[in-house]
Image (cartoon, rainbow, N blue to C red; front, side, top):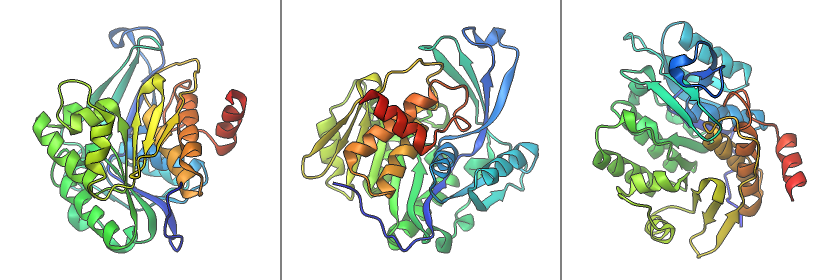
Length: 326
């Protein structure tokens, strides 16, 4: 099986939500307290997915709010260089700043991130800044969970989803759970469940689905997918790290994707690269088995590199890795 899209659309994918700054540690295998230098990249899950999609050859656009300063300019310029349409990225006029993420590379297995997300510009995207005519031009609206954490961004995303559903645009929900942005587990579960039930495709780790279901222990994939299939969902992807990923169809078909082993430098960035390559495969008409391979291969490439956005692979790099490991 493969997912079908309305082909009469100008954009393959339009993402909405967080575009921020990543500051990745240059000194490996040491705690952040001892790290003295960092390299600046564009970051944020939906921004990374848009960048990854564009690098794979998809026509991508972005809806988001930027700080009106040098960081905001850097983000916009970088995304334009990566051939992403930024016509619906707006500047904040109330002094809110770009989100900053400092990364610690303690070891290949132990990486942590320190996020500065208080009063960040991307969470002040307003419903009036979401354009229906823009969204209707896309095959896919990519929504990230972090954008649901606060108002007015939450309402802006829900409005964008309404516009997508009204105009035959597939809604893809990447769970992207960042606990420090939310007030409580209950609030997170409410909004994650609401958007998942409205979405055509849901992608996340097993841990993120546990957050959505407000569970204290690891949940059951079968229960998760059965609940979502009672709503609008056509495909559910649940990732289990080194144990691979699974794609579930409403008719009970389950596809297994193996994780590709690599020399890991850091653990962050894997989810965004997975999503961009998985969606590329779906948009270009590949079946679910192939899409899982593309997602896993892309994630494997990015965790072996220093950045997330800058390390997004090409189609040729992904296909070569799949051939080598087959």
